[in-house]
Image 1 (tube, helix red, strand yellow):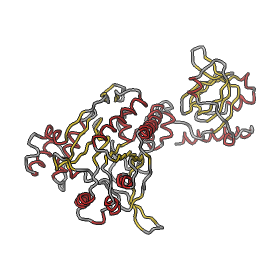
Image 2 (cartoon, one colour):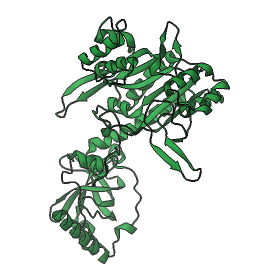
Image 3 (cartoon, helix red, strand yellow):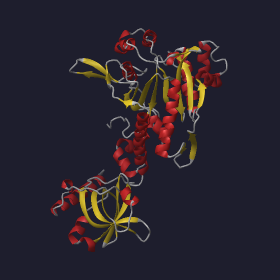
Image 4 (cartoon, one colour):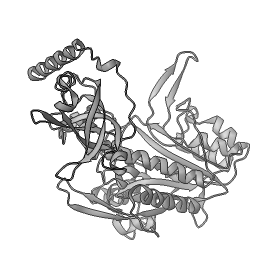
Length: 483
């Protein structure tokens, strides 16, 4: 800490020296002609350019100096000569530090080593960094600092910046894909009187003007279905959901979801939509359908092949493969004992379908590395879906599992208002206040048959970008405040 304070004081002294020379970095303006990557892509010897960025490296050669500047697109070397700049500008240039922002005017040239560079004619100091950059400029390793001070992580780790830029591209391509299929993007309330559409613990807040409690939404579903009732046939939303639950490699209390609904569709059409969308995004953003996941040393530990057609497997069949062919024929008590013997964590209050769900979630889902549509889930798990005609104990649902995680659930939507009320009442356990009456009233006005799907954007990014934790694809993951 003492060393840091000393460096801060040195930088403040340099700022004072700049101002004494009539240079106030924080009042200067500069308009780049292009980004660094554009300058390099359109490189021509002697072409004049104006670039701006943060100083990331400095090499003092006496009467000449080399600095590197970085912007969002990349890095370029800048060559400065005292003779070309004049003594006054040279003294100002010497007051620059790593982390400062500058604008540079000059001409492009190639060094004797073949590096594309810029020969400096003039410069403008645009910001003085009062704190030094991370000690390991070329790789910030402290995980706590990386997540808590993400701006330092982005400064130091180009790979991290690349991941975040690709996340943005992924979301852009999802939007373009859905727009090309006639979907309309909408926005629905984040604060809701009744948090519906999923079984999860909500965050609670209070609206002073209305004098009542609200909850941050746990799902997008019920408001989007209201739009189907209103005559909007294809709608989607990309937005944040909030669940007051634990943190893990797969979970963050606030996370980004895509939900899309198509009138006159069903779960089969949603299956085609999910597969086509993920393949489209992979090809557009990554240029490949083969996704490599590597360990810390850079060794490939698994390759995910998104090439169509993806595997389909019924939920019950997968459970039988793992837990025994007689799993659904034995008693609930026997199922509980066997599940615990297999290593599944079973709570005392678990209902029978939850015991089977724990076997699937803990012992089967993590093994589904290659794309798999797990179909026909138990009706108790998805009360908003239609029953399967060939097996009324299941619903027309699939979970798209890739990389050992559920990426996207989807189903044929329940549009029978009477049956929907009964199933939601059963889920609520008789607690009337948990029912979203406005949604049920909307359904009574008539909703067309429809298919709907949700996709976890964060988990999709984990899979496509070869990451292992949700924190590595979120700019600012949730952390406990520092004491």
